[in-house]
Length: 450
Image (cartoon, rainbow, N blue to C red; front, side, top):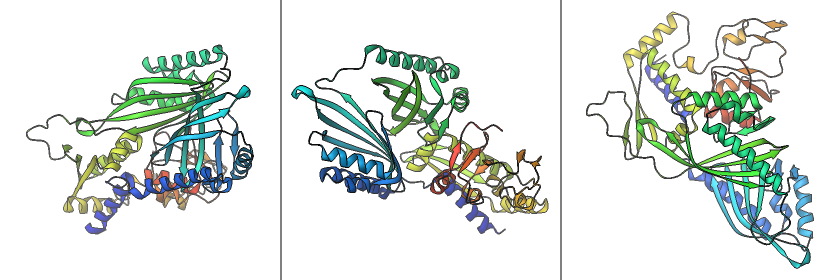
Protein backbone atom coordinates (compact mmCIF):
# COMPACT_ATOMS: atom_id res chain seq x y z
CA UNK A 1 0.00 0.00 0.00
CA UNK A 2 1.38 3.44 -0.90
CA UNK A 3 2.04 6.10 1.71
CA UNK A 4 -0.68 8.36 0.29
CA UNK A 5 -3.23 5.55 0.30
CA UNK A 6 -2.41 4.62 3.89
CA UNK A 7 -2.57 8.25 4.97
CA UNK A 8 -6.00 8.59 3.33
CA UNK A 9 -7.17 5.39 5.01
CA UNK A 10 -6.08 6.66 8.43
CA UNK A 11 -7.85 9.97 7.90
CA UNK A 12 -11.03 8.20 6.83
CA UNK A 13 -11.03 5.98 9.91
CA UNK A 14 -10.47 8.90 12.28
CA UNK A 15 -13.24 10.91 10.63
CA UNK A 16 -15.64 7.98 10.87
CA UNK A 17 -14.84 7.36 14.53
CA UNK A 18 -14.84 10.94 15.73
CA UNK A 19 -17.27 12.68 13.39
CA UNK A 20 -16.59 16.21 12.17
CA UNK A 21 -14.12 18.22 14.25
CA UNK A 22 -16.33 21.27 14.17
CA UNK A 23 -19.74 22.06 15.60
CA UNK A 24 -22.65 20.09 14.13
CA UNK A 25 -23.97 21.65 10.95
CA UNK A 26 -26.70 24.20 11.75
CA UNK A 27 -28.91 22.47 9.16
CA UNK A 28 -29.42 19.54 11.55
CA UNK A 29 -30.89 21.64 14.38
CA UNK A 30 -32.55 23.87 11.77
CA UNK A 31 -34.42 20.97 10.19
CA UNK A 32 -35.60 19.75 13.61
CA UNK A 33 -36.75 23.28 14.50
CA UNK A 34 -38.63 23.50 11.18
CA UNK A 35 -40.30 20.16 11.90
CA UNK A 36 -41.48 21.39 15.32
CA UNK A 37 -42.81 24.64 13.78
CA UNK A 38 -44.94 22.57 11.38
CA UNK A 39 -46.07 20.46 14.33
CA UNK A 40 -47.19 23.53 16.34
CA UNK A 41 -48.89 25.03 13.28
CA UNK A 42 -50.96 21.86 13.06
CA UNK A 43 -52.28 22.55 16.57
CA UNK A 44 -52.93 26.22 15.74
CA UNK A 45 -54.95 25.18 12.66
CA UNK A 46 -56.68 22.39 14.64
CA UNK A 47 -55.56 20.01 11.88
CA UNK A 48 -55.11 16.42 13.03
CA UNK A 49 -53.73 15.49 9.60
CA UNK A 50 -51.02 18.19 9.68
CA UNK A 51 -49.90 17.06 13.14
CA UNK A 52 -49.78 13.36 12.24
CA UNK A 53 -47.78 14.18 9.09
CA UNK A 54 -44.93 15.14 11.47
CA UNK A 55 -44.96 11.65 13.06
CA UNK A 56 -42.97 8.58 12.04
CA UNK A 57 -45.23 5.69 10.92
CA UNK A 58 -44.34 3.75 14.11
CA UNK A 59 -44.62 6.75 16.46
CA UNK A 60 -45.24 6.10 20.17
CA UNK A 61 -47.15 8.85 22.04
CA UNK A 62 -47.43 8.57 25.83
CA UNK A 63 -50.25 10.78 27.18
CA UNK A 64 -50.21 12.51 30.60
CA UNK A 65 -52.76 9.97 31.91
CA UNK A 66 -50.34 7.11 31.02
CA UNK A 67 -52.27 5.93 27.97
CA UNK A 68 -50.00 5.01 25.06
CA UNK A 69 -50.89 5.58 21.40
CA UNK A 70 -48.95 3.56 18.81
CA UNK A 71 -48.80 4.44 15.13
CA UNK A 72 -50.17 7.32 13.07
CA UNK A 73 -53.70 5.89 12.82
CA UNK A 74 -54.21 5.75 16.59
CA UNK A 75 -52.80 9.29 16.99
CA UNK A 76 -55.06 10.63 14.21
CA UNK A 77 -58.18 9.13 15.83
CA UNK A 78 -57.24 10.58 19.23
CA UNK A 79 -56.63 14.08 17.82
CA UNK A 80 -59.89 14.11 15.86
CA UNK A 81 -61.79 13.17 19.02
CA UNK A 82 -59.96 15.85 21.04
CA UNK A 83 -60.55 18.60 18.47
CA UNK A 84 -64.26 17.65 18.18
CA UNK A 85 -64.75 18.34 21.90
CA UNK A 86 -65.61 21.99 22.77
CA UNK A 87 -64.13 21.50 26.24
CA UNK A 88 -60.71 20.22 25.25
CA UNK A 89 -57.46 21.48 26.81
CA UNK A 90 -56.11 24.93 25.91
CA UNK A 91 -52.35 25.40 25.45
CA UNK A 92 -50.22 28.56 25.83
CA UNK A 93 -46.67 29.83 26.54
CA UNK A 94 -45.02 27.09 24.46
CA UNK A 95 -41.21 27.04 24.37
CA UNK A 96 -39.25 24.52 22.28
CA UNK A 97 -35.67 23.55 23.20
CA UNK A 98 -33.89 21.63 20.42
CA UNK A 99 -31.09 19.38 21.77
CA UNK A 100 -29.82 17.60 18.67
CA UNK A 101 -32.32 14.83 17.91
CA UNK A 102 -34.22 15.44 21.17
CA UNK A 103 -36.69 18.29 21.72
CA UNK A 104 -38.00 19.40 25.14
CA UNK A 105 -41.16 21.55 25.06
CA UNK A 106 -42.47 23.52 28.07
CA UNK A 107 -45.95 25.04 28.09
CA UNK A 108 -49.08 25.87 30.11
CA UNK A 109 -52.31 23.90 29.70
CA UNK A 110 -55.78 24.66 31.08
CA UNK A 111 -58.62 22.15 31.30
CA UNK A 112 -62.23 22.72 32.46
CA UNK A 113 -63.31 20.99 35.68
CA UNK A 114 -66.81 20.29 37.08
CA UNK A 115 -68.45 23.23 38.82
CA UNK A 116 -67.06 25.80 36.40
CA UNK A 117 -63.53 25.54 37.74
CA UNK A 118 -60.40 25.42 35.58
CA UNK A 119 -57.32 23.33 36.27
CA UNK A 120 -53.99 24.84 35.19
CA UNK A 121 -50.93 22.67 34.62
CA UNK A 122 -47.25 23.01 33.76
CA UNK A 123 -46.62 20.76 30.75
CA UNK A 124 -43.36 19.21 29.60
CA UNK A 125 -43.20 17.10 26.43
CA UNK A 126 -40.06 15.20 25.38
CA UNK A 127 -39.77 14.35 21.66
CA UNK A 128 -37.35 11.92 20.00
CA UNK A 129 -36.59 12.70 16.33
CA UNK A 130 -35.67 9.99 13.81
CA UNK A 131 -35.14 10.51 10.06
CA UNK A 132 -36.65 14.00 10.24
CA UNK A 133 -39.91 12.91 11.93
CA UNK A 134 -41.18 12.57 15.51
CA UNK A 135 -40.64 8.96 16.57
CA UNK A 136 -41.69 9.39 20.21
CA UNK A 137 -43.63 11.94 22.30
CA UNK A 138 -43.81 11.67 26.10
CA UNK A 139 -46.13 14.20 27.81
CA UNK A 140 -46.06 15.18 31.50
CA UNK A 141 -48.46 17.60 33.26
CA UNK A 142 -48.02 18.99 36.77
CA UNK A 143 -50.94 20.87 38.35
CA UNK A 144 -50.15 24.43 39.41
CA UNK A 145 -53.56 26.08 39.70
CA UNK A 146 -56.97 25.00 40.96
CA UNK A 147 -57.22 21.47 41.83
CA UNK A 148 -58.65 18.31 40.76
CA UNK A 149 -58.24 15.92 43.68
CA UNK A 150 -54.58 15.04 44.32
CA UNK A 151 -53.41 11.44 44.39
CA UNK A 152 -53.41 9.79 47.77
CA UNK A 153 -50.41 11.14 49.75
CA UNK A 154 -49.26 7.58 50.48
CA UNK A 155 -48.80 6.95 46.77
CA UNK A 156 -46.57 9.97 46.17
CA UNK A 157 -44.85 9.36 49.50
CA UNK A 158 -43.94 5.82 48.45
CA UNK A 159 -42.55 7.09 45.13
CA UNK A 160 -40.54 9.75 46.97
CA UNK A 161 -39.19 7.07 49.32
CA UNK A 162 -38.21 4.93 46.31
CA UNK A 163 -36.29 7.83 44.78
CA UNK A 164 -34.51 8.51 48.10
CA UNK A 165 -33.33 4.90 48.16
CA UNK A 166 -32.26 5.28 44.54
CA UNK A 167 -30.20 8.41 45.30
CA UNK A 168 -28.68 6.78 48.42
CA UNK A 169 -27.41 4.02 46.12
CA UNK A 170 -25.57 6.63 44.03
CA UNK A 171 -24.17 8.36 47.12
CA UNK A 172 -22.87 5.03 48.43
CA UNK A 173 -21.63 3.90 44.97
CA UNK A 174 -23.67 0.71 45.33
CA UNK A 175 -24.84 -0.80 42.01
CA UNK A 176 -26.84 -3.42 43.94
CA UNK A 177 -28.80 -0.78 45.88
CA UNK A 178 -29.53 1.18 42.70
CA UNK A 179 -30.62 -1.86 40.70
CA UNK A 180 -32.89 -2.95 43.57
CA UNK A 181 -35.01 0.11 42.73
CA UNK A 182 -35.53 -1.12 39.12
CA UNK A 183 -38.18 -3.46 37.75
CA UNK A 184 -36.74 -6.69 36.28
CA UNK A 185 -37.53 -5.43 32.75
CA UNK A 186 -36.27 -1.87 33.30
CA UNK A 187 -35.22 0.17 30.24
CA UNK A 188 -32.50 2.79 30.81
CA UNK A 189 -31.75 5.21 27.95
CA UNK A 190 -28.33 6.85 28.41
CA UNK A 191 -27.44 10.39 27.22
CA UNK A 192 -25.33 8.92 24.37
CA UNK A 193 -28.40 7.01 23.04
CA UNK A 194 -27.28 3.59 24.30
CA UNK A 195 -30.14 1.60 25.83
CA UNK A 196 -29.72 -0.85 28.73
CA UNK A 197 -32.43 -3.45 29.18
CA UNK A 198 -32.90 -5.46 32.37
CA UNK A 199 -31.29 -5.32 35.81
CA UNK A 200 -28.25 -7.37 34.81
CA UNK A 201 -27.18 -4.98 32.05
CA UNK A 202 -27.74 -1.95 34.31
CA UNK A 203 -25.71 -3.47 37.14
CA UNK A 204 -22.80 -4.30 34.82
CA UNK A 205 -22.83 -0.72 33.51
CA UNK A 206 -22.88 0.77 37.02
CA UNK A 207 -20.01 -1.42 38.22
CA UNK A 208 -17.91 -0.31 35.26
CA UNK A 209 -18.76 3.36 35.86
CA UNK A 210 -18.00 3.26 39.60
CA UNK A 211 -14.69 1.49 38.91
CA UNK A 212 -13.52 4.46 36.80
CA UNK A 213 -11.77 7.21 38.81
CA UNK A 214 -12.61 9.75 36.09
CA UNK A 215 -16.37 9.19 35.99
CA UNK A 216 -19.02 11.95 35.97
CA UNK A 217 -19.74 13.94 39.15
CA UNK A 218 -23.34 14.94 39.96
CA UNK A 219 -24.62 17.91 41.98
CA UNK A 220 -27.73 20.04 42.67
CA UNK A 221 -30.16 17.15 42.22
CA UNK A 222 -33.86 18.07 42.47
CA UNK A 223 -36.60 15.40 42.28
CA UNK A 224 -40.12 16.33 41.15
CA UNK A 225 -42.68 13.58 41.85
CA UNK A 226 -45.65 13.80 39.46
CA UNK A 227 -47.78 10.81 40.38
CA UNK A 228 -46.15 7.79 38.77
CA UNK A 229 -43.65 9.95 36.87
CA UNK A 230 -40.53 11.56 38.36
CA UNK A 231 -38.55 14.35 36.68
CA UNK A 232 -35.05 14.90 38.08
CA UNK A 233 -32.85 17.91 37.24
CA UNK A 234 -29.18 18.14 38.16
CA UNK A 235 -25.71 19.33 37.16
CA UNK A 236 -23.08 16.88 35.90
CA UNK A 237 -19.35 17.49 35.41
CA UNK A 238 -17.08 15.24 33.40
CA UNK A 239 -13.30 15.46 33.03
CA UNK A 240 -11.89 16.33 29.61
CA UNK A 241 -8.33 16.03 28.30
CA UNK A 242 -5.88 18.74 29.36
CA UNK A 243 -7.35 19.08 32.87
CA UNK A 244 -10.53 20.74 31.62
CA UNK A 245 -14.03 20.00 32.88
CA UNK A 246 -17.25 19.81 30.85
CA UNK A 247 -20.41 20.92 32.70
CA UNK A 248 -23.90 19.83 31.64
CA UNK A 249 -27.52 20.39 32.63
CA UNK A 250 -29.07 16.97 33.21
CA UNK A 251 -32.74 15.96 33.11
CA UNK A 252 -33.84 12.39 33.84
CA UNK A 253 -37.44 11.22 33.41
CA UNK A 254 -38.49 8.12 35.37
CA UNK A 255 -41.64 6.04 34.89
CA UNK A 256 -42.75 4.19 38.04
CA UNK A 257 -44.60 0.88 37.90
CA UNK A 258 -45.62 -1.28 40.88
CA UNK A 259 -43.42 0.74 43.21
CA UNK A 260 -40.23 0.39 41.12
CA UNK A 261 -38.50 2.32 38.33
CA UNK A 262 -39.63 0.83 34.99
CA UNK A 263 -37.81 3.28 32.70
CA UNK A 264 -35.15 5.98 33.02
CA UNK A 265 -34.51 8.44 30.15
CA UNK A 266 -31.45 10.69 30.61
CA UNK A 267 -30.71 13.91 28.71
CA UNK A 268 -27.57 16.09 29.06
CA UNK A 269 -27.13 19.59 27.61
CA UNK A 270 -23.76 21.36 27.80
CA UNK A 271 -23.76 24.72 29.59
CA UNK A 272 -20.89 27.16 29.30
CA UNK A 273 -17.36 26.57 28.12
CA UNK A 274 -15.00 24.13 29.84
CA UNK A 275 -13.02 25.50 32.77
CA UNK A 276 -9.56 26.77 31.85
CA UNK A 277 -6.88 24.07 31.89
CA UNK A 278 -4.04 24.19 34.39
CA UNK A 279 -0.87 25.94 33.21
CA UNK A 280 1.06 23.71 30.81
CA UNK A 281 4.65 22.64 31.68
CA UNK A 282 7.38 24.78 30.18
CA UNK A 283 8.58 21.95 27.92
CA UNK A 284 5.68 19.65 27.10
CA UNK A 285 6.32 16.25 25.55
CA UNK A 286 5.76 16.16 21.77
CA UNK A 287 2.63 13.98 22.00
CA UNK A 288 1.05 15.73 24.99
CA UNK A 289 -2.38 17.33 24.57
CA UNK A 290 -2.41 21.10 25.00
CA UNK A 291 -5.21 23.61 25.54
CA UNK A 292 -5.83 26.63 23.37
CA UNK A 293 -8.45 29.34 23.26
CA UNK A 294 -10.37 27.18 20.78
CA UNK A 295 -10.15 23.95 22.80
CA UNK A 296 -7.79 21.04 23.44
CA UNK A 297 -5.48 19.76 20.71
CA UNK A 298 -4.20 16.17 20.96
CA UNK A 299 -1.19 15.38 18.72
CA UNK A 300 -1.35 11.96 17.08
CA UNK A 301 1.76 10.25 15.73
CA UNK A 302 1.09 7.20 13.56
CA UNK A 303 3.98 5.16 12.25
CA UNK A 304 4.52 2.15 14.51
CA UNK A 305 2.40 -0.78 15.59
CA UNK A 306 2.41 0.60 19.15
CA UNK A 307 1.09 3.95 17.93
CA UNK A 308 -1.61 2.22 15.87
CA UNK A 309 -2.61 0.34 19.03
CA UNK A 310 -2.75 3.65 20.90
CA UNK A 311 -5.07 5.00 18.18
CA UNK A 312 -7.32 1.96 18.67
CA UNK A 313 -7.41 2.67 22.41
CA UNK A 314 -8.39 6.26 21.63
CA UNK A 315 -11.35 5.00 19.57
CA UNK A 316 -12.45 2.85 22.50
CA UNK A 317 -12.25 5.74 24.95
CA UNK A 318 -14.23 8.01 22.66
CA UNK A 319 -16.91 5.37 22.03
CA UNK A 320 -17.29 4.78 25.78
CA UNK A 321 -17.49 8.47 26.78
CA UNK A 322 -20.42 10.68 25.68
CA UNK A 323 -18.59 13.72 27.05
CA UNK A 324 -15.44 13.10 24.97
CA UNK A 325 -17.50 12.43 21.85
CA UNK A 326 -19.43 15.67 22.26
CA UNK A 327 -16.21 17.58 22.92
CA UNK A 328 -14.70 16.16 19.71
CA UNK A 329 -17.81 16.91 17.66
CA UNK A 330 -18.07 20.49 18.99
CA UNK A 331 -14.41 21.29 18.29
CA UNK A 332 -13.39 21.59 21.96
CA UNK A 333 -11.30 18.46 21.48
CA UNK A 334 -9.27 18.26 18.24
CA UNK A 335 -6.57 16.00 16.85
CA UNK A 336 -3.36 16.90 15.02
CA UNK A 337 -2.25 13.80 13.09
CA UNK A 338 1.21 13.37 11.63
CA UNK A 339 2.50 10.27 9.86
CA UNK A 340 6.11 9.01 9.79
CA UNK A 341 6.41 7.89 6.16
CA UNK A 342 9.36 5.52 6.65
CA UNK A 343 7.84 3.93 9.74
CA UNK A 344 4.47 3.48 8.02
CA UNK A 345 6.12 1.67 5.13
CA UNK A 346 7.98 -0.56 7.58
CA UNK A 347 4.78 -1.46 9.43
CA UNK A 348 2.94 -2.15 6.15
CA UNK A 349 5.81 -4.32 4.87
CA UNK A 350 5.90 -6.25 8.14
CA UNK A 351 2.16 -6.89 7.97
CA UNK A 352 2.38 -8.14 4.38
CA UNK A 353 5.36 -10.38 5.18
CA UNK A 354 3.46 -12.09 8.01
CA UNK A 355 0.27 -12.36 5.98
CA UNK A 356 -1.54 -10.16 8.52
CA UNK A 357 -3.76 -7.16 8.02
CA UNK A 358 -2.48 -3.61 8.38
CA UNK A 359 -2.42 -2.01 11.83
CA UNK A 360 -5.32 0.24 10.88
CA UNK A 361 -7.36 -2.61 9.39
CA UNK A 362 -6.91 -4.43 12.69
CA UNK A 363 -8.89 -1.68 14.39
CA UNK A 364 -11.93 -2.16 12.16
CA UNK A 365 -12.07 -5.87 11.29
CA UNK A 366 -13.27 -8.85 13.33
CA UNK A 367 -10.92 -11.65 14.39
CA UNK A 368 -9.80 -13.36 11.16
CA UNK A 369 -9.29 -16.75 12.85
CA UNK A 370 -11.92 -18.65 10.96
CA UNK A 371 -13.58 -21.88 10.06
CA UNK A 372 -15.07 -20.67 6.79
CA UNK A 373 -14.00 -18.31 3.93
CA UNK A 374 -16.44 -15.55 4.97
CA UNK A 375 -14.78 -15.30 8.39
CA UNK A 376 -11.36 -14.86 6.79
CA UNK A 377 -12.78 -11.94 4.81
CA UNK A 378 -14.07 -10.32 8.00
CA UNK A 379 -17.70 -11.12 7.15
CA UNK A 380 -20.42 -12.83 9.18
CA UNK A 381 -19.74 -16.50 9.91
CA UNK A 382 -21.49 -18.87 7.50
CA UNK A 383 -20.81 -22.11 9.39
CA UNK A 384 -23.24 -24.87 8.45
CA UNK A 385 -22.33 -27.32 11.21
CA UNK A 386 -24.51 -27.64 14.28
CA UNK A 387 -21.93 -25.82 16.41
CA UNK A 388 -18.85 -23.71 15.66
CA UNK A 389 -16.17 -24.23 18.32
CA UNK A 390 -13.96 -21.39 17.07
CA UNK A 391 -16.69 -18.76 17.39
CA UNK A 392 -18.61 -20.35 20.28
CA UNK A 393 -22.03 -20.00 18.69
CA UNK A 394 -24.66 -22.15 17.06
CA UNK A 395 -24.85 -21.83 13.30
CA UNK A 396 -28.56 -21.13 13.43
CA UNK A 397 -28.42 -18.60 16.26
CA UNK A 398 -31.09 -15.92 15.69
CA UNK A 399 -29.21 -12.99 17.28
CA UNK A 400 -25.61 -12.48 16.01
CA UNK A 401 -22.96 -11.18 18.41
CA UNK A 402 -20.64 -8.41 17.18
CA UNK A 403 -17.04 -8.14 18.41
CA UNK A 404 -14.06 -5.85 18.00
CA UNK A 405 -14.53 -2.32 16.65
CA UNK A 406 -17.99 -2.18 15.09
CA UNK A 407 -18.17 0.25 12.17
CA UNK A 408 -20.16 0.70 8.97
CA UNK A 409 -18.07 -1.81 6.99
CA UNK A 410 -18.66 -4.63 9.46
CA UNK A 411 -22.40 -3.91 9.74
CA UNK A 412 -22.80 -4.02 5.94
CA UNK A 413 -21.94 -7.73 6.12
CA UNK A 414 -25.04 -8.48 8.21
CA UNK A 415 -27.83 -10.23 6.27
CA UNK A 416 -30.88 -8.09 5.48
CA UNK A 417 -33.12 -10.15 7.76
CA UNK A 418 -31.12 -9.35 10.91
CA UNK A 419 -33.09 -6.95 13.12
CA UNK A 420 -31.37 -7.54 16.49
CA UNK A 421 -27.71 -7.94 17.42
CA UNK A 422 -25.72 -8.55 20.57
CA UNK A 423 -22.69 -6.39 21.43
CA UNK A 424 -19.76 -8.22 23.02
CA UNK A 425 -18.89 -6.62 26.41
CA UNK A 426 -15.41 -5.70 25.12
CA UNK A 427 -16.58 -4.52 21.69
CA UNK A 428 -16.49 -0.86 20.61
CA UNK A 429 -19.42 0.61 18.66
CA UNK A 430 -18.28 3.66 16.65
CA UNK A 431 -20.63 6.62 16.04
CA UNK A 432 -20.85 5.69 12.34
CA UNK A 433 -21.68 2.12 13.32
CA UNK A 434 -24.42 3.38 15.64
CA UNK A 435 -25.87 5.49 12.81
CA UNK A 436 -25.80 2.47 10.47
CA UNK A 437 -27.72 0.38 13.03
CA UNK A 438 -30.31 3.13 13.35
CA UNK A 439 -30.78 3.50 9.60
CA UNK A 440 -31.27 -0.25 9.19
CA UNK A 441 -33.66 -0.42 12.15
CA UNK A 442 -31.43 -2.89 14.02
CA UNK A 443 -31.83 -2.93 17.80
CA UNK A 444 -29.14 -3.84 20.32
CA UNK A 445 -29.81 -6.60 22.81
CA UNK A 446 -28.03 -5.50 25.98
CA UNK A 447 -26.78 -7.69 28.78
CA UNK A 448 -25.09 -10.24 26.42
CA UNK A 449 -22.21 -12.20 27.86
CA UNK A 450 -18.95 -13.09 26.24
